[in-house]
Length: 200
Image (cartoon, rainbow, N blue to C red):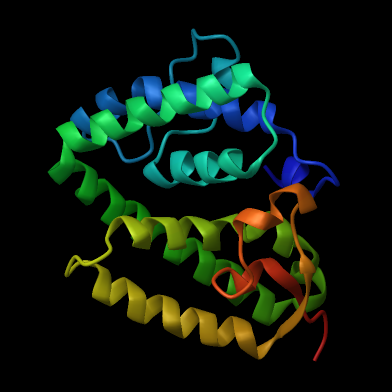
């Protein structure tokens, strides 16, 4: 992720491979009690695939919808999204439980990054473009809880973390490849347009 997202051009292939694999195993994942699902290593490239989580799929699918894809890649993405949505609908209560657990973990991870940055800004600030996908995951997971009572505690916690981020934020260019920027309007995804200060 860090290498691909930090590149000048977005390489859709790794995200597409992961999305397809995640979608194919998503129903089995929801039926299980595992939060971080190890995908089938017997599939091509299986030993290199990331662990399956709700946010892992949501992040990649969102980026891929923004990317210039070939017709074959577009078909693969659409099929993967349909598989994901079918499993989400069939096991909705289990899906919401996974979203809540995933969201709590992503908020923890984002707080840890901000804590590390507060201690070592010079060292941590350059990693922001590779780490900010966690903030995207948090947003997409919160969208899945829209209108539900479970969202309130997470929205409060995110507000606090965003206030911390703004304290050391310098607005600027889109942090990821420019071909994706049109899908991330600055007013909603402000944290993708700029950088962290490297020193007080």
